[in-house]
Image (tube, rainbow, N blue to C red; front, side):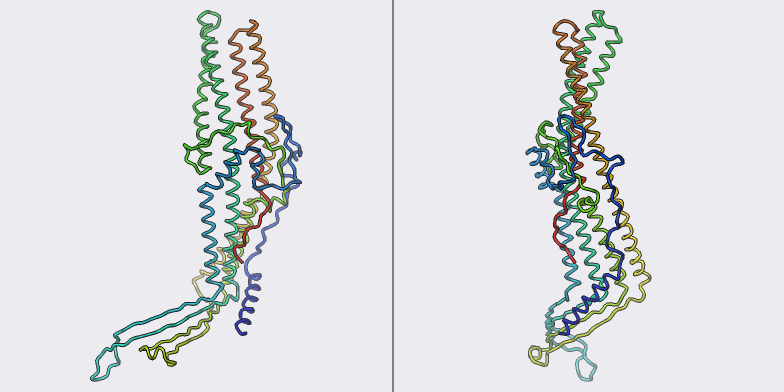
Length: 484
């Protein structure tokens, strides 16, 4: 009964102390913007390439957002990366190690310790100096003892320390979620870039081939006297300039494929086949959370919030450590100098006691430690504010990029269509003998240049859509409780 009363009193004092020590655990409230960007964007983005994206706030973000691209190959790549990524596996193992550390710390602070010792010794020791007796004598020692001790956490120092560590683990859990989402986004954008660069490379190769043919045609005309030397040199320079872009473009295409392979957990030489850009369908509807919901969906914001709570508990634990601690201890066992004494009632040995420790002077270490964690808490609060503002900016920038991507794509598509029609018209006129052959080469070059710009605009729109999916986060899912 006394033990129960002591336990209840200890818990009551601990909980009351937790509210008395340390700063406010709740993160500061930051005014949510009415709309993300400076200029409010319409819910319906401009139509381009036959698709008009809709930004909707009446549907919830989904964890596996990449499925909206309607590509089974892309889904398989993302799942492979999430399963095989060494960086993600390392983060998961680090999180598991932190959880085990918390279990160890709680076990040491929340429960009493119990140890059992068994001793059997034979010793030669000094004897009391008595005439005619040897100065030393031999004897045996037998002892078996169970010892227990418990520190009563009256002021919550241990409780706050445990909760601070639990908050740090919570922070790591959200950081792991952010890493997972970032990995998926990087795989999607890498896949898009690989497809776009492959098509750009093919179009540029055709552009270079047309440039070489045109340079050869102008050189032949120069020999026949129908073109000037300046025309010949200009055509040669254009062909060389176009050919000079190929090495860097080829290197970039291979570099992105290498990066994609590493994201999947593969070696660079085992990069997956290129998925055609046409196989990736632009999601027509993209969810957009209001700013107040964003605070509860983005893993980076939730991680920053967990950091505020953890540092507040650390500051409280540093304050509580300046108050007295009570330690209860007891031991019971048997002992003797021979086996018969050890097993007899006379061999019983025991002790119990209590000790109170009040820190008085530690060279200013305790006060400095308190100020240290207070400053750490203030830094965490500032980092939380910055994380929230950066999240708002991230969403705003992505929305603006998507809006302008649609405008850019619409214009590049228009330019490509015009260049394609001009090329077709020039070829028809050439077949009728109304225009020279080199004119078709020039028109072909203009079309390929316009086609490259169109490919880049399509890829930017696809990639920025993935960034927006990532930037809005996802509904907070239940995370296993890791501590008090």
